[in-house]
Structures are given as structure tokens and as C-alpha cells.
Length: 440
Image 1: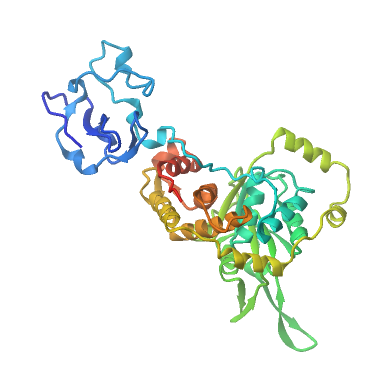
Image 2: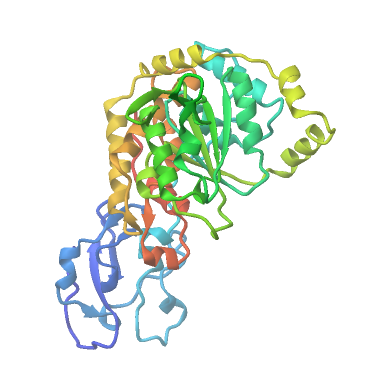
């Protein structure tokens, strides 16, 4: 970075520093306050961080840095002075502000999770064939919500858990019940309330009058697909009871461990529109969830299908039995999950995942970045998603498609970014698109 020569002294006006773009060599200017932040070159789109060590160098007031560049097709908002000749201050080009306010550089990959993009075609592997059988049966009862369906299946076949954020009435319970019927797994549901105790989840010893001894009675957590509804309405000690279950796949009561039957998938929900009477999940527990999925309102076409499909007053239990076939079993799920671990991940892709996770810790709008567990979740999820596509190797598209669900609950915005109205998904998308995608 080169320093603008000092030829005047106007301390009341903004000072600027001048430097060259690392990619194309174009000379750029920014206000001194922008030093240390991420900026984007208006010519080539390269994003780089301004060296903070140069911030202490003497700089020239903006009025004496010479005429500002005229607006061009590549830089339509170069500066306001171009349209105001009488201004005695040459403002910094708008395209050299921090990267969070600049449209990200386009890439060849999409951050959207979509089932519709997966064409059935000819099944190449056992995992792909099973995946499409599951989708076919689920679609008989459940409409839309691609991110929820695909994310839950990836988590299930990666031995992970899912946190779902959505408003009421979008069919989360229906989805889990349908999934349990399709997979041949037991389904359980716990409604979390403020007075829910840990023993209400895990179970507790009950005194048997006949045998004159205590016998452990399993709680509702002893199932395979567990819907933890409105998990943020219970206090921390109840969360802690679920934490061991999610991580260790067992329950310890009175010093005795009770193993849970595998597979075991927790789908926890929280309502984003109500905060009264809720307890924020601690970061330690949020990190235990492989994905945080967002269930939005359905499209007009999907909602019309929902009205047609579920407005006939037909008993849902009967429909699940008569219309939905069981196409898998717990044993097959375990076998396929183990087989997915053989999907190859190239060293360059591992490096890409590592850079992506580590960049969240340096991004200026994030107070806290993602943990190494995020990288592990991305690796496992990419392997499973590749297997769903019928491949025995993972590609960058798999990683990017899962990046938002993996990272959005593991980063914390700075106070400034929160006040400015930034959203986590928006900043993460910008971050993802600044990284060069490896060619495999």
C-alpha cells in the first residue's frame, strides 16, 4: 500500500489512504476509518483486506488527493463529486467500501438447498436409489420445503441433528411422522415447556411394589426420530439432559448408562416470532446441531397443493398407513450411513472447507466464527450429499450447498452489524463468494 503525499493540513476533513489492488493493480482510495476492513475492487471484483499497519501513516486530506475518477460502466457510482463539480472534497469511490455492502463476486455454485434440482434418472448407487424412494413416498403426504426435507435426510445419513426455525403451522410434525413411516423408524414427540424436567425427557427410576426395587422407566427420548417441539421454552437444565443424548446416544440415570437405538435423529424446533417465556439455547448446544434449517411459507402453487391434499377430513393415521410405504429399515440406514464414509474428498476440497470455516473467524461483521465441528459437519454432509447424487466423490457444489445450514447458527454478528440490519445468511453468502472455488 502506498501513501498519498502530504501537501496540506485540513484536519477537519476526512483523511484517505491510497493503495493498489492485489489482483489488477488499480489505484484505490479509502477513508482512514476503513483501514483493517475488507474492500472490493470496482474493476476486477477482487476482495482484499486493507493492511491495518498502514493506518498510522500520515495521509492527505481528501480535498487534496486530486480529482476523483469519473463514473464508468464498471463503476457507476465512483463518487458524488463527479456530479457535483463545486464540491471541494473528493469522496472515496463507493465501490471501495467494506465487502459487506458490495454485491458478492458471482460463482458457479448455488447456496440453495433444492430437491427439485435432483433429477431422478437412472440410479447409479444403492444410496441414490434409496434416496429417491424416500422422496417419492414423503411427497405423497408432505409438500415442498426442500431445505427441510433434504437437510433432514443428509443429517440422518450423517449421524447429525437438526435445528428447525419456522413459524407454526408449516407441517414439521407431519414431516417427522411421515419420515418415520417411510423409514420404518419409531417416532416420538416432546412438547417443551417451562416446567419440563430432565427426567420427563430421559425417564426415571420407578419403585416396583411387587419386586420391592426400583426399575428404570425409559422416557420419550428413547425413540429413533425425535421431534423436540419449541425447545427454547425449557430452562438450561432440561437442555443439558438432551445434550448428552444428542452427543453420546445414551442416557445416564443413577450412574447407569442406557443406550439409545440407532439411528437417532433429533429435530428441534424454535419459533422466531415469539421471545416471551423462552430461553436462548447456549452456543455449546447450538454447536451440537449439524444444521440449522429455515422453513419458510410455501409458494402459491405448493400451498394450493396442500389445500387440495389435506382438506378432505381424512384421518391422517389412516393415510400414513394406506398411502405411504415403508421403503427402508433402521438396519439399512445404518449400513448406508457407514458406506457414505467411503465417499472421497480431495485434498483441495479439504483445504477449501478449512479456509471457509477459518474465514468466518476473521470476517469483520462476525464477533465469533465457526468451530472446527463446523468443518467436520461440512465434510460429513458433503459426502452424504454426493452419495445422494450418485457420486463416490464430493465436489465444491456439495460444500457450498450445505454451507449456510452448517454455519448460520455457529457465527455471531458484531453489535455494529446487528444494528445496521445485516442478516447472517447475507453475510455468509458474501463470505462464501469471496473464496476461489477449487478445480478438481
